[in-house]
Image (cartoon, rainbow, N blue to C red; front, side, top):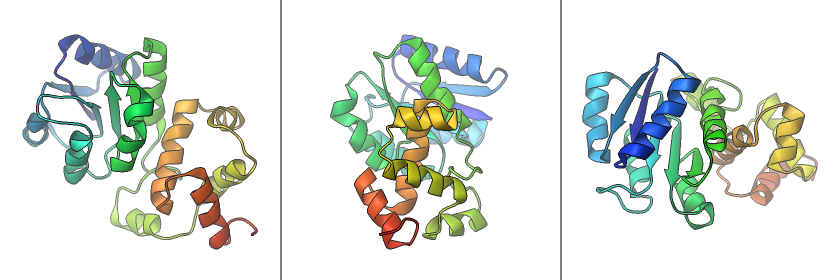
Length: 206
């Protein structure tokens, strides 16, 4: 597995790398200080299995970094972190294609939980994004898997991410990853839109 950490602040980059090494010892972690070094680094070190991106870099502004990463690596798990509060940029980053948004002010435990949630969201699982042509065709359809239908039912029950995590025995961060990917598959941006989509497509009774 190749994990790329892009951050121009050495201390924060080291902190992210340290957490990743605890979560996935022995994996190849490539540290970069600018986004424009990512594509050349991938050519040298191999295709990314995960990318951790600082929102504010010398060569990016706002969500431009997220857009640039998605232009080259549309289905690679992408964690974005920033000193800015989630209320400022989380929604925009998710809409641009990030899988998860982490505040730098979060403690090491929360940071590890967020990254673990993304790592455990296997791209070949029922919740994950497609990684080959056949799966890609499936992702393009409106048919939801049994597991995704279960998630929709939980939304209809009005459960919070925390409550869903408790029922599924997974972390709240993992629920967020699954939720964002499900929304992206359905082409919606909110729980209300997801429920409307589900009813329109026969997943839930009208």
